[in-house]
Image (cartoon, rainbow, N blue to C red; front, top):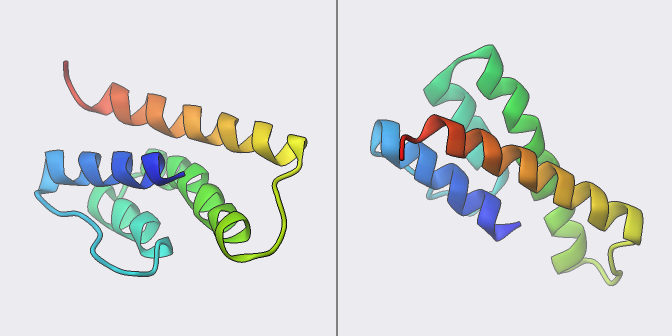
Length: 90
């Protein structure tokens, strides 16, 4: 999940020279949407936000991901990272 936050930062830095410095990880999704301000960015930010919300469950709550949640997290991660790759040339 940290990979997705870093990937989001890479995209924002590539285009705008900005990255999310907030301790609140949800602000990373807000930064993405505010910088790109497109329907596509808003749609793709749902993957980022889902992962951030579930990251908190794994890191701060006393429980493990269930298999279904882990598979869903992998799906969201792949979709977000693939989108970012499509936006950065090379």
